[in-house]
Amino acid sequence: MKRLLIALAIAGAIYGIGLSVGGVLAMTDSLPLGATHNECDEFAKTIAEEKGIDEKDVEQSDIKALAEECLAGHVRTESDVLKDFVVWSVWPAAICALIFLIWPLWARTLQNQDAAEGIEHKDS
Image 1 (cartoon, rainbow, N blue to C red):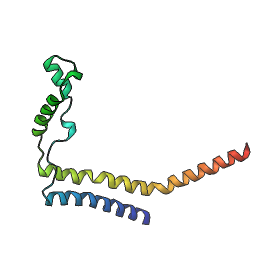
Image 2: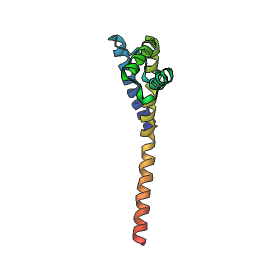
Image 3: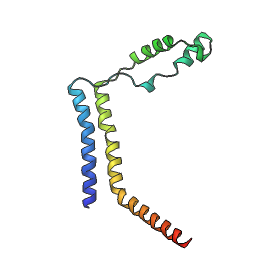
Image 4: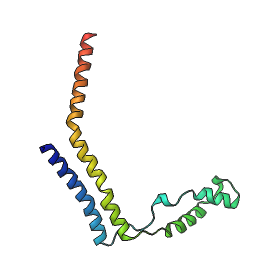
């Protein structure tokens, strides 16, 4: 029971850190509201198809212009970004708590494995 409470405390602390970061960014008006890199891609391919040229012949300036145009069209709301902090802060908290709970079992498994390998080496 004590171990479970400690795991919950660890999860709560890590979750709190994630929420605090989101809160500080919101209070300082620094939330990242722009697009993410995965919302706009394959510019070279698009430009190459439009111009009828090979992808490797596409100018970087053309890719940059298309990327800027695409990214400018993807603006997120403040509530969406804050919701991301609330939701995505759960994962690191849960993973750390799970590692804390599983660690004794893992350590015991490794000790048993080391002991078994020691017996095998003595027998040979």
